[in-house]
Length: 194
Image (cartoon, rainbow, N blue to C red):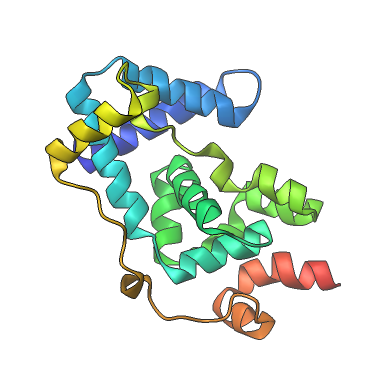
């Protein structure tokens, strides 16, 4: 599976989910699992490898700060979900945000979260709620054997080094965040203090 194939899987699952009723996050997850379950174990391993590469590529402080603004805070686990959710938004949003994170101020769900103005609304509407499921959801194998196979497929997984995250800055400094992310700051800082 190359990167174009990976994005095709994501976009197809998004299209399938759009026609389903119920919770959009659950519909997307179900559609993605169905797509992956209809493939081979090799394809699922390749999907996971592409996912990990994309997920790791946005393990950066500027992306974390974006998740912090949108979510009203962003723990380590929430940042993992946020990055996965950005992937679930599809190639266009992922690539735009990876280049300029403040572009998420234009995302309809992010705007809706800002208008609603509550932490609960932020959590339920931010992109991270549509996290792609792990490939074990689409595999009949249990988690441990899947990751054993995955380690054999592409080598042991390693955590991103903190040094690769980019320049450190204060996520709670309003002036700093306004300078770096003017669109998101208008939505989440100025809106909340007006």
